[in-house]
Length: 448
Image 1: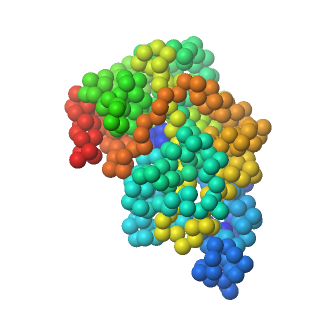
Image 2 (image 1 turned 120 degrees about the vertical axis):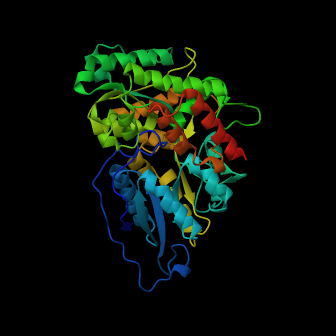
Image 3 (image 1 turned 90 degrees about the horizontal axis):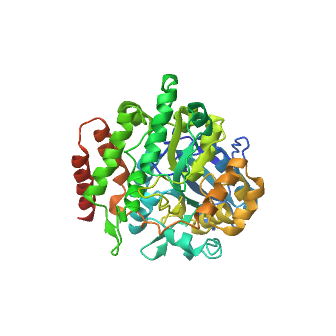
């Protein structure tokens, strides 16, 4: 195994879905073992046969802690597959996609790629990703729950093996609520008004210590997706679904301004800094905000950073008791269409999905596994926080509604556009009405 240095350490907290890494449920030391390739072998000798070694490249985004456990999994894979050497390379979210786009354009994508929901359609529809069902002897995707597996389908082809599921939810710091004299919310009934009230109360009580109720709000595509869904609308609707309306968007941006004006969230300069901060430096990760919107499997990373036993709550709702929570494929394992070693690459994906030892190392940090048997394998080894995340997802399965369609390929930049428009609202450069129209214009441009 050879590790290629890349951008170390920084990972976004919430704005980019599941980009925050780390907080391992079963952690160990980073082992970097140089695996020399047999000088007599050739890359043309096959996918790890007895005639010589092959080398495949594997890339992912995340922070240091995610890298540590992933390197351990790769080391175990190489031990189990002595004919395959894996060169690993990783970076943070922001640098990851630029680098991947460049390599794809050059026909030099890494063999195994960590893929995100916002990007899989773009890469899959361009023919950049291998049909994973084309390697049945190396990769068994039938172990994944069918409704989860279909989230990796593009144009009728499975181009991503879902690593797991995650639910957009609220992380809460019970210690800060107690210090502020604020009761834990009843998340089965709370509304956005309740959320603003509680976050404001925390800021009022602890603001002199630099603590706010909420870290940021109004710049995240996941936020507007959830808010639209609670109105019976979708940002990118299917044919039988209602598109997000100007009225809903105006209401969303007004909510963001109200949170800022009441002190529930800090001033815009701090919010825009926070949204791209590493977990270890973020307010929720340093016990200086009581609430944080996140995909639920990120909770372990924040527990590790904060040293506090954090908890998970349902989203606040427009109507009490109707948060309209959904499953989201946390991320995917994909194989480049250009790989010279599809079988070896598929074997690595299969190992990360189906091997019990790999599952114990990976835990739920990249999502609750979509494979029931693997869920039961990891349960006894999970930390209390990991068990909480697993149980939270299980409980929500009785309530989840149909998830939105995968982000269209032409809309892969929507997250960045939402960040730009939302920040202009917070800084006063746009009114909620202007921002709502700007979002609708962006969506319309994608459709054109």
